[in-house]
Image (cartoon, rainbow, N blue to C red; front, side):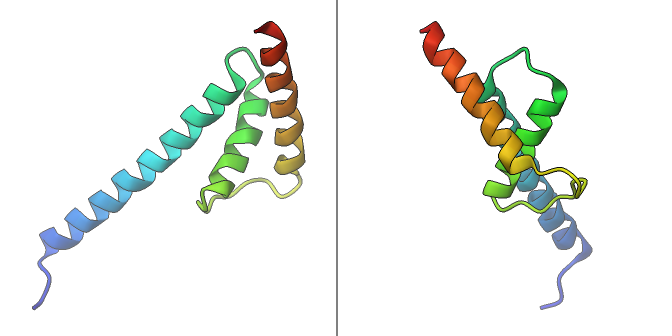
Length: 85
């Protein structure tokens, strides 16, 4: 059977929606973990790490080592959160 143009559009739309859901989910997870009030660069680094953990491909400047920075930022944020409890 020859697929109709509408079938291809539907598949593309579903793929786009699934990818969007994964990206938003990653961003929400980073914000839940770190909480509010950090610099945008901290969230960016950790979002890149979360996207990597979820197996999503993306482009990021190669001069930055986000895994080490994100781990340090997350550790500091979580330590501060536990002390506040």
